[in-house]
Length: 225
Length: 225
DNA sequence: ATTACTAAAAGACGAGTAA
DNA sequence: TTTACTCGTCTTTTAGTAA
Image (tube, rainbow over all chains, first blue to last red; front, side):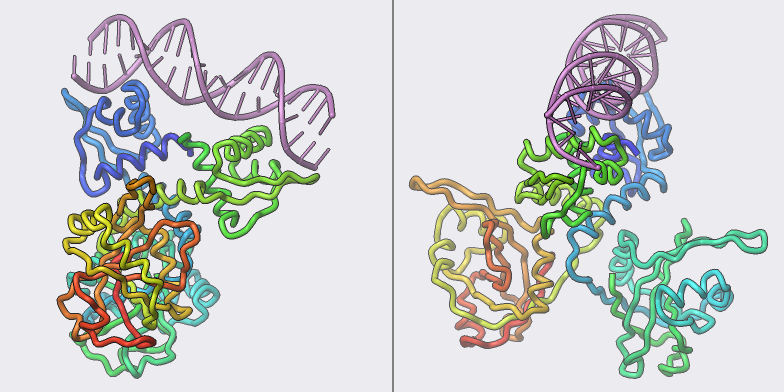
């Protein structure tokens, strides 16, 4: 990936083109990247051609948004900086109430393609099923931080004519005296439309039973990001 | 600053050239930056010429370390990513024991050049003097995170034929019931050899007296980074 | 094997222009 | 004003060569 292109992409992100479309002209963008209008215009074209931004050209400028791929590309650099500068691990506290999922977790955790990775990368065989928490608004904001963290990569795979997507894990501790010593991890599939108010936790044991939890109980976790 | 140059600098940092000198040849570096040996060699020369890395050329390669300036340049990009991706503020807890400083704090906090900035940027007039904490080893690691955070910039200035260096502030809370409602901030001068096991805190009041603290007492703070 | 040149090829830039 | 061309110039890269 060209270096100037990523630079331009970053400046667009800085102008706010991640959350929502921003309106700008090549002229304004030229100022932002300190170049000529021509270069700015060319960069925007190139960015679009590479699928990094989405453009809508209007009479007096254009509307720009980063695409998924664009954000992904930026995250890669961000990960590099984390690798360079982060000295110790940060922990964040996330709190939510126990809810019952759709039972998908039970299915996915037993798939060999995932199970093996959990065993080697997390160091435990997951209990079939996930503990699902519905997050409060504060925790949702905190959870978003995980989006920009690399975590422990779980690769996608193909099996029986189906593809199973990848995801990321973050090891966590459940703040409950009974959970002392029980390994667990948050899993975040890299699906595009994954709900942001839900936290899925896997563990070698049946947490719901082990911690005597019932629907609606508050569960507090400390996640290593 | 050229975009390709910063890219090269980042890769060097990723190879570990921040902490200590790394040995590498242009050939190896060419692989890292995916270019020809010539370009790799030229980039290293350019990096040195710009004062971003320090080089020592030997028979079979060279020893490379980032300079202060190089690290600084990298931090700038890192700050941009933080601006892009950080959604909410993170707080870190730092703990240390009260020590008595050299009294410099008392001098600096009364200087108009600093005082005015504290007033406008932090919203309070600092009590003349700083509360100095000697950090435990865990807190030292946590404190290092502040190195990679922009914080609230305090500009350096010149006065009476002397230059006074700049620094950064982070607003903090002291975890002591009596400190409830008292504004305070950590200050980190941008001196090159600032001790990493000390935390200096300023506040509008004389904390030592207000919180009934004595030499050696443990003080816990929550710092907004 | 290195680093560090030179010179040719490739690429990026910005002025000018059209729509 | 815009965007999006072309085209000449300047910069960067790479191959080749010397030490």
